[in-house]
View (cartoon, one colour):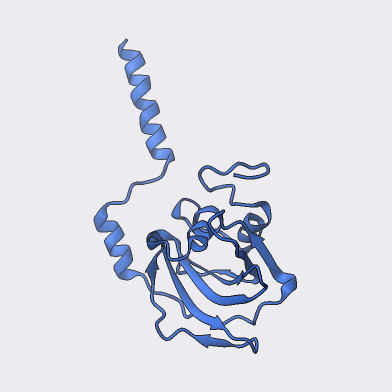
Length: 179
């Protein structure tokens, strides 16, 4: 009986070690204090051929696209991309945005104009995805670019996630035809 209990304890400890080290509140606070955001350079305006549509859920009749040519993953852990939201009538809203995966925030760096130029957002600051100010951002983070609050490792991983309907590392996603 003791041997069985010892095996159980060993397996439990191995399971904890395999899931990665736990961070204390102090460690997370120190990381947040030491974090520095990279300068976000405005990308070229998106071209139709580089847009990849993603499923933003049933709560909207808009169609959402990411410009694959704009996708980047910074050393600061921010996933940056151009988002195109198209209404059923064909009107488009274009924005250059970032997702800070580790703490569930987004920022809008710039908005696209009708002449295919950018205007920087003068009120660009990090906002919580939890406020659900745009369900599409929450879905984009959770299912595509920030699986389990960890940023994609590469542009290729992000493009593959968009093309296949979700990131294979995201909890609850299947590797076949959908969610």
